[in-house]
Amino acid sequence: MSECELPEVTGHKGLEGTRGTVVVTSLASDSHTWNLVFLQLLIEECGYEVINLGPCVPDEILVSACRDLNPQMVVVSSVNGHGYQDGMRVIGQLRDCPPLAATPIVIGGKLGTDGGEGVSRTGELMAAGFDAVFEDGRDPVAAFHAFLAALPEAPALDRDRLAA
Ligand code: B12
View (cartoon, rainbow, N blue to C red):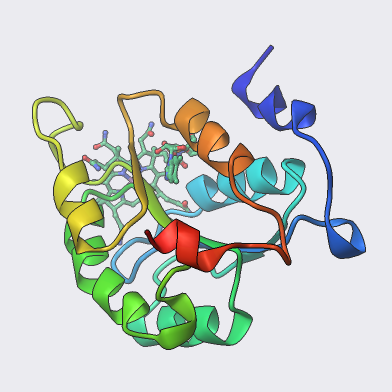
């Protein structure tokens, strides 16, 4: 069984046949797109509606879109090697936006230019405000699937508990 088949075993759905809305996005510097398509399909197979903001998303567009959509989760992807810098810059802007203060926000992909080997950016990104970091080289898709499966479905998301 491939990793793409993992979502088929997840359970119940919420209102209107979906578990909620997830925003998938790249960051301002990153023009790669197939990573976003992959994530959209994966998350949709888990039962969520996905709004894919696409590549090269300016910080202000990302923040305003997430504020307006108020999603169940924001999934940030970067593969061009600038994910750490871009992610560190934008996470504070997202957290400063009241509706997003406790929204699950994760980042993954190729976050640096060292292949992820020997250098862990996870601690710094999580200290800056990300809930989870799924960097290539550590089976990120399986870990992400487990994270997604553990999320409460809309509308019963307990933001206070997630923020704790
Ligand atoms: C196609 C491609 C391009 C195309 C993109 C076209 C397009 N519309 O998408 C073009 C030619 C534009 C391009 C440009 C560049 N690219 Co390019 N590109 C690639 C290439 C060949 C394939 C990427 C791809 O589509 N993969 C398919 C998708 C489905 O997989 P993926 O991107 O690897 O994503 C997977 C994981 O990263 C992970 N993942 C990603 N995000 C997330 C998020 C979460 C939450 C989770 C759980 C998992 C996850 O899951 C995905 C599926 O397994 C790769 C090399 C390669 N063979 O991978 C280089 C590569 C990504 N590019 C690279 C580079 C350096 C560049 C450029 C900087 C080159 C340059 N000097 O101009 C520019 C960047 C431009 C920019 N502003 O971003 C490097 C990045 C190096 C690094 N990070 O250390 C790579 C790895 C090539 C290399 N070996 O050097 N590129």
